[in-house]
Length: 458
Image (cartoon, rainbow, N blue to C red):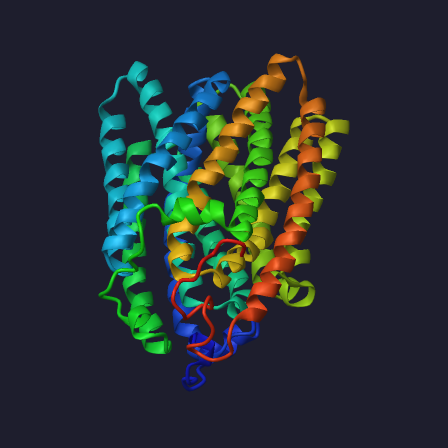
């Protein structure tokens, strides 16, 4: 039995206020609050670092970006095995804390190196930092959603995931605004220290959310005991992501999104490098775009995401971003300019954060528990960055063939059409798997609360 099925706590003023925005049960409100602070902390940390990363990527040369994406893919593949070991060996709360503190230590190390580096060394440090930040972002956010889909069910996800994602948007707005307002007066070193502190706040939230998830659920003893590791095998994430038809299509969804996003990112990097000359102006522009994306995202997450999911279901909602991408890349092909590229960037990123990402997380609520951590981590990180890699080198190849923004945008539009078909299939399949879940807390094999089944053919 999940949170929604636990006995309701007494109604509170906080719950009554929250219930005006979303459909939330009184017993879910405390967990929802800690989930909010958790993702707020992570995204504040990342969005303090992101504009610094983007500026360093441009400073290292737009023509070198594909090499930075290659390094990012290698980093993802390298980190997945030790992460699977942590999941196999340690309890959930422990392996999450170890992961976040590892990244926090890395942030402080980069801060020290940048403080001591010469201008010539800063270029190379920046390239390494670009790769590391790209790895950091996907891992810390993937770990968050791994825990969330382990705590909440598919039904709860439709009601709550959009609102939880709004906590991410508020964190992103806070981080972006902080960077915009301080970048001209504060060295990147000091900004990084703030990012590390926010990761420690996330560790505290994990502890509180773990306590609530145990007290509010009636899972089998093996899943309730926070002192026991999830177990399984070291290579389960790789194996199941490729052996399951369902998870393979989830991988394809993320791959197509990443490839088309990389095309757009490279187009944006090229036009920005020509439009702005100084590093501070480039950093401020990237941070301003981030701020605009997150303000638009927040409005949709708070008031529309849950309603859209409830009204249209997973399949149609998941298909909205690919459909918008087909149209958007078509517009860029017809009207190639800084304005059209930035407008599509705003729509795609806001659409991903507000609609596609919360909906995609619901896909993982119907898979076995081990897959929620290991296969999901592999898909969210390695597969995503593989899409970046394919996009980066494909963009370089198309550019070497003298194709311009119009022709590359047409290629992206065709890929988005294939992504649209994949999205619709995934939504229908998720609905089938959700219906198979037993209404009983300890039901059929292969359900949320039963031992891990063979996932081949899901």
